[in-house]
Length: 300
View: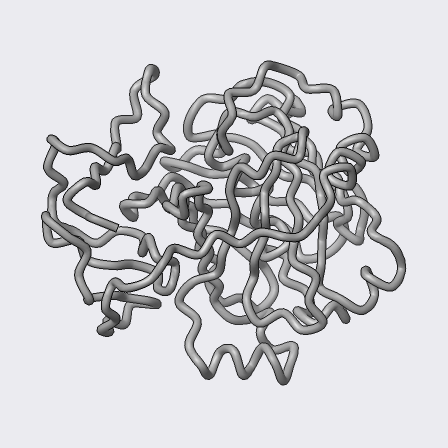
């Protein structure tokens, strides 16, 4: 990628999509700074004002890694009719509540498919619209060899820090999600591609039906509420306790559910949302499994 063509669009005005975090342009210079690694190998990579450099950072530790190679966009080999079937199984909101805009942040229905793995070494999700067109993906970044070994050999991984990037189909990050290490309760820190915090998703209770609050700027903008103790389906509600979105997990069969880490679920957004609620809802929908983070081998 030629970083001389890169422009960071951080204008969050009403007529600008704040999630076009990277765009190709020839004229506008990009200031030097740390940004989400567009190659997806690390948490952050330094841009010197003209090009991406070899300087990278993950979990606050800097390292050297030349900016060579392609940006990885996770996908899954899943038949379009199965994606459409997921939407149908989710119920009423399979009928779009509003006209979609063709992006991760403007579509009323998102279908999230996790790769089926016997042992999950790295979180990877593909994100489709209701017509089975892939819009983007979620990829885990910043994992070292030791952490991968922990994931392979034990379930202790569920207590460790996890960092995810939400990317578009060009591989460019649009959101960065961090779930800090936990003992009982989880939280997700939601940032844009330049590292600016948008808000946090914070677990409110440790027992019973799990509930998260969506917070930004010292205010609670809404909540995510599990509808049963297994946290299978979630109702997402605004500050007035009106449902604005819903997460419905879909059944993939006994063998796949018991013996792999794959989760498939449908996110149904009932109306267009403003910032920061829009980013928090999308982040919540894409990270709810990581936020709960049960046994990564599918045993919990």
